[in-house]
Image (cartoon, rainbow, N blue to C red):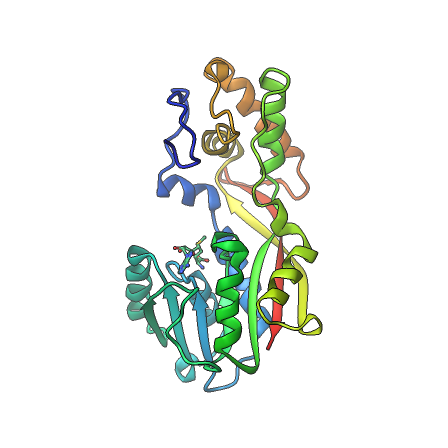
Length: 286
Ligand SMILES: C[S@@+](CC[C@H](N)C(=O)[O-])C[C@H]1O[C@@H](n2cnc3c(N)ncnc32)[C@H](O)[C@@H]1O
């Protein structure tokens, strides 16, 4: 079974296997800019601030925060993550860059941290990765924030790369073939976001949802289109179709054409390109 849960053994020979290196190439500086735009909403920080980086991964949120603070020595950051490998990278980065941060191996849905501990919580690129629409984790965030404490989280309000995949699928496959589903769609919706924060304890009038443009520099459009089709082309409920190998070039050309048409697309010197994403930044106060 593949990572999308499909039992279809066929993959076109042209498809790139999804390695972490290729994912990083596709993402470019996207996750770092997203983190930077999100933590900007909790600045300025007073000396002595205590911060939890929720599902910190390898530390994009902590890095973005520390980079925007003149003197971070009076901060105390706890990066919480359940993936040991990622947490080890976080701990190493904390050491190498003298972050005032401690790496904690825990499920963020069951924190062994006292009530009213933190002045701030960061959660970048995590909401859609957390079980049960993130509500159990956000309840823990609410519980461990001090009264008046601020949580900043994000989700995508618009990504320029899903419609090209759906268009290529529609135009190269038999009519009625299932389309790759945009599983992130609900995370665009402000009402949905407000609801999960309210279910987690935050009061409606203490929740603000902002939009921020994230202009991403990534690999050249030809390569990007090939990688994107490789990673998402087979992600409908039908998986890859037998004819997808023969239609490979046609599909990748459509993905490219649609990307080039997307709002904010720019070709850069040196064979790279820019794409425009839009993020929701949620700022919730206890
Ligand atoms: C897309 S990554 C984002 C990581 C990081 N915040 C960043 O911006 O690079 C989502 C992270 O959530 C972590 N995660 C998901 N569920 C978790 C849980 N219940 N407890 C702790 N970490 C969790 C994953 O292991 C992964 O590192």
